Length: 160
Image (cartoon, rainbow, N blue to C red; front, side, top):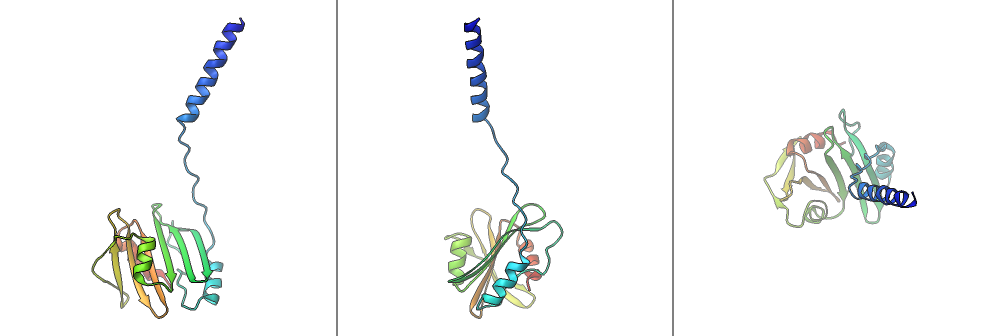
């Protein structure tokens, strides 16, 4: 009887260990954050005009937001209605520096895109990330994501 109990115990422990090794827990969904208050704070502190959409399109949600004063940098990370990431970065860095940091060191520059009268440089990398970048007075703005360029263009049009 003790032998049978020992064998049963070994089988149960083996089953539990195999189940744990083969477990694929889904990642927890990204929590939505309220970006409006942070955008206002950044606008009050930054030496440049901070951009953010007054409201998000249906199904979009902000998942990360932040402002750092030294060096001045504004970030707003979003998930669109299909769950793809779209990021907004503003800093006093050069366009090449932001592209290197947020897209890829080996990203290639494509044709410029005119959005509401302003020229934006388009960039892509081999992994499918796209970015639109505009250098302005004291600030470089980069919008990036693994989405089609028209999604980025539509998002840029929302920024105020």
